Image (cartoon, rainbow, N blue to C red; front, side, top):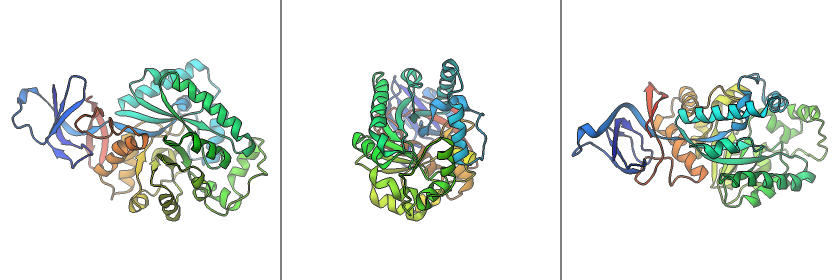
Length: 386
């Protein structure tokens, strides 16, 4: 057996424990969590300075865009950002793309992340994921705003999903965003995913709401630049979220990602519509693209289930959950460390449906153990303990 202690254990499932002891078996499964070392042989205990946390769950990532690190200009807004990604994502050899994916997977592991909800538009991440220690849930992202193309795009997604399933990887379908997926395609995805977790980019920009409310804004420019005619689209006079959500909710978990411009009316509408919603915050990506942060205190006030993501390296400088938490802790002083760690661990595990194994330090689980340093309220990974 292995005995590990630190100044504080944030088990997540109970209040923080000062100088407690985690007991592990030979394969790293937790046998017990003790509140003191009384009765134990002190020489057998591994002692650490700092905080022990469960391994992190990154609820939203884009591993396949790792080769775009440093290539996309910052603070351009979502429309120009999307244009840069479309123009540059395939301007690289498969070998270099695979190397970037492999290095990103290694970075994820070094930063104490044990599970990831990852967006995929192709099969480029299959090999790395099949060999990784990370528990990946791949969201096969579908894009298609023209309702006439919904069935064909859906079938293409099913074919891509099979490539992940053939490697025994977890994969479900996911719509990209309200402005890029027709309601017809959303309905097909919701029906196919019945009972399975999915995700959607939500209200990442002001122009997303403007497009649905008035039919104006920068998205018109994006469609024109792509040579797409959207004569079939009619403004709903409602926000983006209120225009699509009823077509996507089902009896399983749905993560709304970014939520940078979600109003209290939107939040209340969504929470009333579904009890299975998770609100994913990726603050570094929001600052990278739109120079704005979501209103985390507003989500807290409305008892929303919050999870944390890094987004991908196209819109971030690193894949670090602690760096995402630090942005929130620095901007919103009312958020506690324990609260933020819960979002980054147990809530993320609940969203992905893996809370029986990950997300908290409890008997019978093997969640990974991360040693953290904290200076004030800022966190950093000191060591991976298990």
